[in-house]
Each structure stands twice: as structure tokens, then as C-alpha cells.
Image (cartoon, rainbow, N blue to C red; front, side):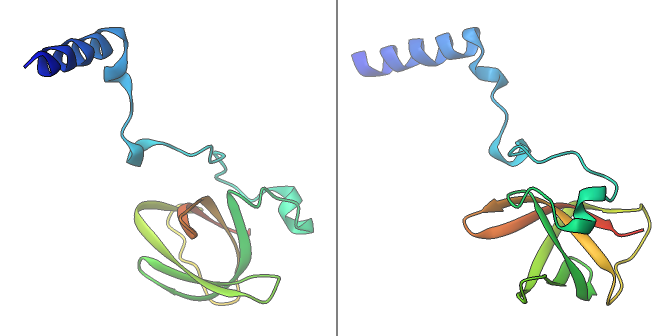
Length: 118
């Protein structure tokens, strides 16, 4: 019984000290840059390889984008509910240059934003 009263005190202390402000994992941004437009360095393949994937659209269906990357890899990326395509209202088309902005999680690229080359 002593264990539970100690745990209760620990939880109460965490809530009072600021533990309640911890965001859920799904809400974290994992350091993803806030890009919403095509960046000049991307044309010369200078980009943050941890958060940006560049390529050409090989195929697009709702919630799925297949990208042919410069290194020859063709990769399919699932788009989640809430992934935004820029410019707003645009639809990726085959052959169009594209940047996916997001993060890797357990070897899978999670796209927060899709930016089409102007």
C-alpha cells in the first residue's frame, strides 16, 4: 500500500511541476523545418536529408505518393490525414519535381508537407 501512496505523490508532483504540459508523441514535430515553398538550394540538391526528400512524381493517388529519387530509388510514401500539399489546392502529377518535408520513423518517411516545384 505504501508503494501506491508514493506513486500518487510522484504523479501529483509531476503535474504541479509541469508534467501536464508534455505533448503527446503524435503532436511532436521531430525538428521538421516549416517549409511551405520550394527552396533555392533544392535545385542544386542541397537539403536536409533527415527531413526533406526530393524527387520526381512517379505516381499519385489520394494518401499515396511514389517518388523517383535522384539516386535511382523509387519510393512510395503514404500521406497521412493532415499532410498538406503546397501550393494549396495543387495535385501532384507524373513527372513533376517534388519535395517531401517530414521525418523518418522506424525507417519509414512520414510526410507532413508535399511541396511542388513551381
